[in-house]
Amino acid sequence: MCESLEGCALYCDARPSTMTNHPKPGDALTELRRRNAEAEAGGGTERRERNHKAGKLTARERVALLLDEGTFEELDKYVTHRCEDFGMQDQRPPGDGIVSGFGRIDGRLAYVFAQDFTVFGGSLSETNALKVCKIMDLAMRNGAPVIGLNDSGGRASRKV
Image (cartoon, rainbow, N blue to C red; front, side, top):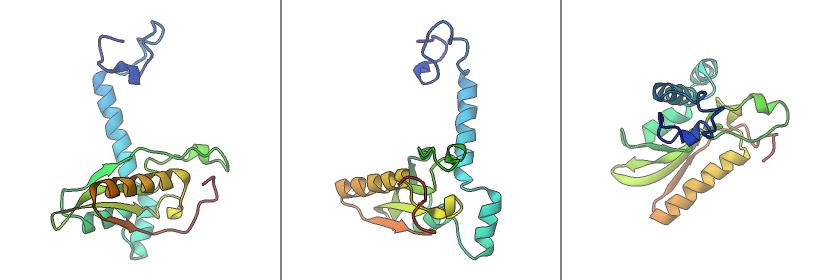
């Protein structure tokens, strides 16, 4: 393990040849901020504006309106699909088109997922389904409701 970065196993395998290639602590934080901004952007500015012109809110906006302010805890924000077909390996947006997590509605715990139409038209992929199933399992374990906000063009043509 590298002495200069606790938990460096995430970045290098601690062999002498790789020890100089791991990011500095500040670089890791910068990378996390970049990934967070990319996930928050969904399908990007152009698609988000197109959505708004059509009178629709984004998945994040719908979740924010539903839940009590400041209570949303997002899960699996950086998950991406595993499809290698149809050129999909070059398109791996963080979250893969589903915003999922939990928060409170009038002070009561609720689990939510929302399809993001700005990412692949809100279509369902394998990773989307896994995220939704995880939310349902957590809700059942905690005795809380699940609310799904759908905005989709349908099932993805990539592997489901």
